[in-house]
Amino acid sequence: MHTHSLREYMDFIHRDDWQGVADLMLASAEKLKSIGADFLICPDNTIHRSFALVAERSPLPWLHIVEEVAAEAKRRGFKRVAITGTAYTMEGSVYPEVLERNEIDYRVPSPMERGKINRIIFDELVNGIFKSESLGVFRAVIERMKSEGCDAVVLGCTEIPLIVTPENSPLPVLDSTRLLARAALKLAQEHS
Image (tube, rainbow, N blue to C red; front, side, top):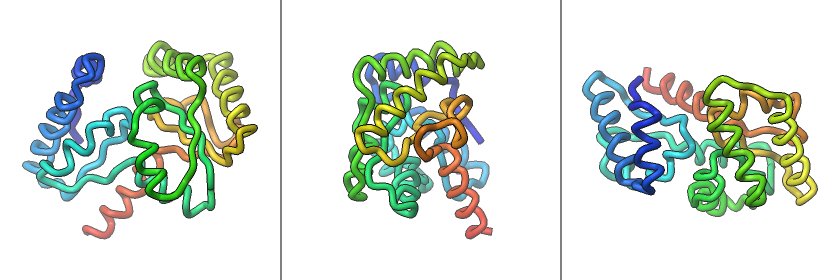
């Protein structure tokens, strides 16, 4: 396992420098290759915006978090998913590109809802603050997206499952972090 600090990544992200993000990912890839890794994963949905810049230059193959989400959505027969995550994830092209390629429709929260979700993630969840009213915001957004025909919700940020669970979500959840972890375990077993 290797990662640069969140601050290093966020410095590049705030400047909209996705090549800088890719360079950090590649530095981790080189380090992990040097200590014997067979493949790589990144549980951070946001930095997958740099995945295309990384994959071609990487010394090792990567599992793609959104590909794993799409595969599970197809396996479970979901037709239209709601995407939650950081503003970078909800407003970016990573989920739309992969979902469309897999013939899965999607919806994102409204601009106001995206702002609330992003604030909760960065001001609360990454700091270990869990408020019932923040869960209420997520539940209301998910319920509204259910009314738009969504049949599942993507928890597209590592921290969201800290408050949104299969038991308290108005829709079935696709927990991107858990799905990636399961895919990594399966692949690791195949390599052993």
